[in-house]
Image (tube, rainbow, N blue to C red; front, side):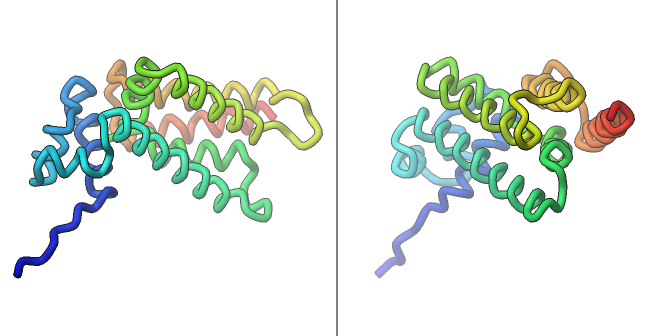
Length: 181
C-alpha cells in the first residue's frame, strides 16, 4: 500500500511568490507553480481552488506575517511604530519581493480586494499616528510613503535594486527622518 502524498500549502505559496518575483506576473499560473513544485496542476487547484484563491492566500500570508512581525517589534514599546514599519520594509523590499505585482493582480480582478488593500493601508497609517493625534505628522508620512514607493517601484520592476541596495536606501531614509524630528 502506498503512502498518501500530502501537499504543503506553504511550499506552494513560496513557489508562487518566487515565480512572480523572478519571472513576473505574466508567468504566474497553476501550471507554472505545479511545475516548480513537481506536482500536478490539479494538486495546486486542490489546495487553492482558483487562481484568485492562490492570490488571496498569498496576500493573507503577507498580511499575517507583517502583522505578527510588527507586533513583535513594537511589543512593550520596544520600537516606535514607524521604526518598526521601516525595519520590516527594509527586510523585505529588495531581491525577490513579489508583493507589489501580486497586489496589483488582486486589485485588478476584484473590487473587494482593492477595498481590502485600502483597509490594510489605512490600518498601517493608523498604527503610525501618535496616540491621541488625528493625523500622522509630515516627516513620518514622508518616510512611510518613501518606503512604500520603493517597495512598489522595485516590486513592479521599474527599479531593479538588490536587497542590499534597498536596505542601504531605507537606512538612509530612516536617518534623514530622524534628523527631521
